[in-house]
Length: 327
Image (cartoon, rainbow, N blue to C red):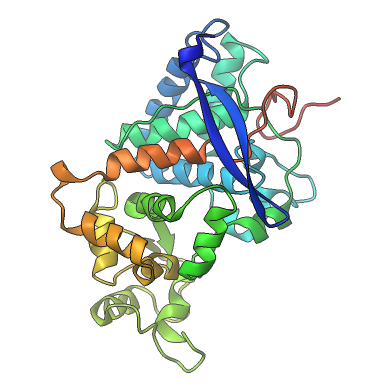
């Protein structure tokens, strides 16, 4: 492998409360000699699915994020459990969609290059290519991750950033993964193509403090609009996280948040920190041609892809993404 193509990034891990720098190596050319068409195969499958159903882009991006935030980018979110106690069975992951795209890409790769390419790498590539299909930014995906064998419901339940979290908790959650405040606000920008439901916002509309009130941090006009869409007992209706621009990867999300129309508490609270607020307000007023968001998003996605990765002899290369290999 050419030395110039090896990316050495420092992943900050939290060990007994202390951040330590651990060098991790992945390679843009990791599969080039043994499976030179690996990325082309994954891209072809992803284009086939996402071009028919554009909303898959947000779903696959979210799946990659949820994978990396729990036990690192090891494909553990893809594992199934006969006891329904895997990561995908945790409440925050019950709405994950797009497993069929990852499985189809893995199947295509196994036909061409059996027992070589990890499901963790497949998911990282699929997420990148899905965003690119809808006109979003492209980013390099260094490869060589190995697949984890452990997937626990409680890890996802307790480890994923909450849509109800305030800025202090979010910054701590991201810092524990080696990600900073800029990464937090930039990756939140992925909500520009996000879709949620009334279930996650009703408490902000009808009973924010337990007194039948609405969240005062929300724009009153937005509260009225959401109440028309989400009656008190409606927990199913879908909501766009970036109204008016839900299928376009752009900076419109930041305009929405700046107007106090963030759907989640975790969106609104970006205005409660000087650094994240400045980023939101800057992106909200800049014309797209002057915006750094696409580049920033690409940079943060590369960092995300290095979180707690398994390499070398750690982990395995799964034959099927939903099941660990038999010993």
